[in-house]
Amino acid sequence: MTDEASSEKQVPSFRQALRFWIKLGFISFGGPAAQIALMHREIVEKRRWLSESHFRHALNFCLLLPGPEAQQLATYLGWRMHGTKGAFAAGIWFILPSYFIMLGLSWMYVNGASMPAVQPILSGLLAAAIALVLDAVLRIGKKSLCHAMHYAIALTAFFLLVLAHVSFFWIIFGAALLGYFLREKIEHQAASETSAIDLAHSTRPTWKRAVRISAVGLAAWITPLLICVLLLGKDHAITQMGVFFSKAAMVTFGGAYAVLPYVAQQAVEHHHWLTHEQMIAGLALAETTPGPLIMVLEFVGFTGAWHAPGHLPAAIAAWIAATLTVWCTFVPCFLFVFLGAPHIESIGNHPRLRAMMQAISAAVVGVIAQLLLTLTRQILFISENQQTHIAWPLIILSTAAFLAIRYGKINIMTIIVICGLSSWVML
Image (cartoon, rainbow, N blue to C red; front, side):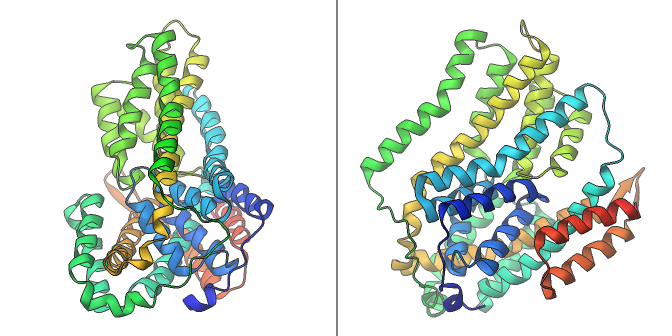
């Protein structure tokens, strides 16, 4: 599908969009790459609510922000179609189902519950996510890699992440610099990407608007922390968690996969909120729930406060800590998106910025490919007792799902359900 075709958009009503955001909150399994792929397929390819070029500009913008990129992308897309109410509808429903699910799973975990019967179904859902991400790599790659330099940037980003473990932030920054200085080589291609982004909602960026949003956002962000300091004291575990995750929200570029090693080190080794085994268990729970993978932080808050509740009942302390952790993680996301979103509209008018975004788009293809490799290793190749077992049933299931997504006309939700049930039967 060309950009011209995708530009024949039908902006949905708020009620139509709300139904989609609610459904997305319940079916967005597989981490950021799968969630981005799902939004791309549903919003651009199937429903044609946004053009291809505008979706990629939005994705590039969200990748430059600290925090979970998929949730920020949903928030921005909601804002772009229906303004503030659209942003809140998309951003909140993206995390609300996973918040309650993770809350229940965390409670079950600290009370010694296990879910062996559910695990095969969750493995099938992740097999479907692998197929979805592979399809996204091919689709987004076809649109983004329009020049030999783009292919070089994508491959370099992939190998730097896989082999050298270079920070995601530096890869995106380096791609932007290449785009800026090599504008003349790729400007002719980028110029074709100036398809109109004249959707229903438009906001001009002004200093007055930025100050107003910053004031409201910072007040909403900090107020719960001040309440915890006043009621619990600055040394209480809940207060310390709020402060720590507020700091993390400012510096964690690259999404969940980039932030987890840092959080694990601080939560386990420095603050001693939980053990390494508990951290791994929390990551496993987050992998098997819809919503952002960063929801593992909710588990960290819940478990840490459960074991160090202070003068509060353990269940109450755990719920407060989990909720505060989610609040301090995601409120900054809304703040960053609201501040930066209007500037996306002006990118097409600046050739160098346009070339930078083109280069970042190419790097994003390599980043998603690396996330696909990570997800494949975790799900299809299982390491136990220093031995690797190949999960052939899941490989077959993932391959069938990919073929259905790529060449069939089957609804994505139907494929996800079939994969879950098939995995339960096979495993």
